Length: 155
Image 1: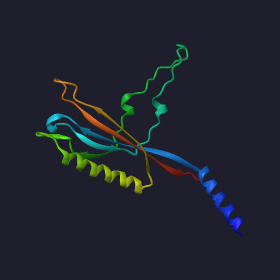
Image 2: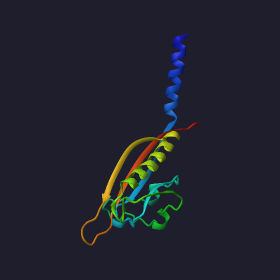
Image 3: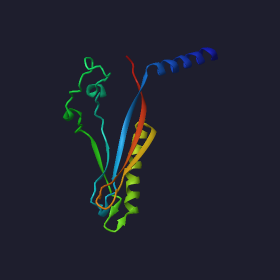
């Protein structure tokens, strides 16, 4: 009896894995590091689905086989997205640590919401484009949070 129960559970587990897929989601935070607090900071995400293949061409070096990518840039744009305001790192007096903590609270809230929806945080990457000198007052700190979750397919 125990062996048949074990085999049944093992079969269910194996079949569950055979019919599951993984889907990914990216959440991006863009935090301004522009002096005087004049930049814009946001947490953005979308549920819009697009296929990269629609905007991809292959090159081989053979002019007869190569096809030019004629996709329209405006077709790539996504206008349906969620945008959460964040505070800028700087204000008139300089770096504002309260703003950084406030942003951490909002980002944490979003990450916790996604975890409750079954998303698993699998990778985080950050980058900075900062002030490059006297005439460059631009800068952003960008972080991408990459999530995945199992999606069952019962076809």
